[in-house]
Image (tube, rainbow, N blue to C red; front, side, top):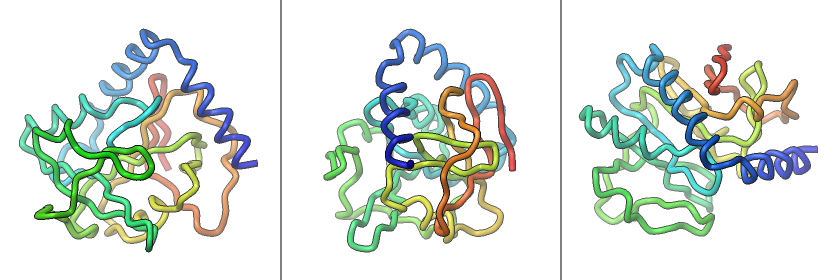
Length: 188
């Protein structure tokens, strides 16, 4: 069931017209920029979008300009964990990992303790109003969400068509607190 839903959502995102995606992204950005979770968020972990994901680069650029500390996930496949690594304005030339996602090299990297994150922007393929998400199947973000401090906020960005009645969940799946689409906001 999870694989079928992943395939459907990947295809829906892939076939989205570029002009439509740009307009939907803008609406999502506006919701996010006005969201109270950003008010005191100084240490933000945000994924570097790839393929047909909502483009996170405009968010990163704005937050870097605002002098916030921005971190991107570096995947640790041996433990299926994420290291938050700080990026700076030259982030657009980062190397690509084995998943096809850009990420900084760990040589001389500024790695933040997960407990110091204020806000985590979580990717996914499908979401439901209970805050559950269907990711890409590695469990990286579920492990990360378990390690956050209680005050940290978790937020997902998605197109409204990625919202489903119920995401199939397992015992290790973790919820996000807020989901923003171009049309609505869902909160736990």
